[in-house]
Amino acid sequence: MSTTGFWVLVSVAEVAGLTALILVGLLGGKHVKDPGYGWDGSLHTFNYHPTLMSLGFIFLFGNGAITFRVLAATGKHICRTTQKIIHFIIQASAMILAAVALVAVFKYHNEQGYQNLYSPHSWIGIAAVALFVIQLLGGFLFFLFPKFGSDSLKSSVLTLHVFCGKFLFMMMMATVLMGLAEVVIYDIVKPDTFPAGLIVANMFGFCVLLFCVCILFILLKEDYKPPKLSHKEDSIQIDLHAK
Image (cartoon, rainbow, N blue to C red):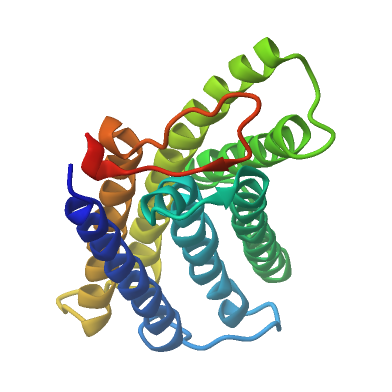
């Protein structure tokens, strides 16, 4: 099987993801009630929240999820441990950005006297963050260091790890789109008008959806899965032409 389809999907995902990041940055910098970025507890602080969450829990999370497939599809022999480290660094970076985004929204709410955790977006978002932390720590402890458990236990954990990764990614997509709806309702929509910000927001939502669909398709398609390794293998190579 040719790798052409794989790389087309990856390219579409990257273009959609980068476009989404540009749009969400433009949204917060120009098209909300109080555009701009700052750390003063105003809406400028809140504007960091959607921008950093989109960068961390959509773009980086998605790219981290397909790391093994992308590295394998290059046809190069890469140490399995190196692949795991790359995967972990990307996901850890996503978590750091998300943590800053959470601090930003809580700082804004607290300084403006608003209630925290009042919407489905916030509840599902907090649940997703908590599960992501567990997923990140579990992946590190079982598969990087100190590699807890027997081979059979690790195999079971890996199955759960892979499933939870896909489930979490869908949770993040849903959370971002719900958050976008709140931004549109509270910060953009005006009676009897159709401001440019709505076009930016709607295009952002479309790009997020396209990015996530491409990533999920890559994750779910059997032909794109890297082969399983034996215990003695230290590197991995996939040749999609052989299928």
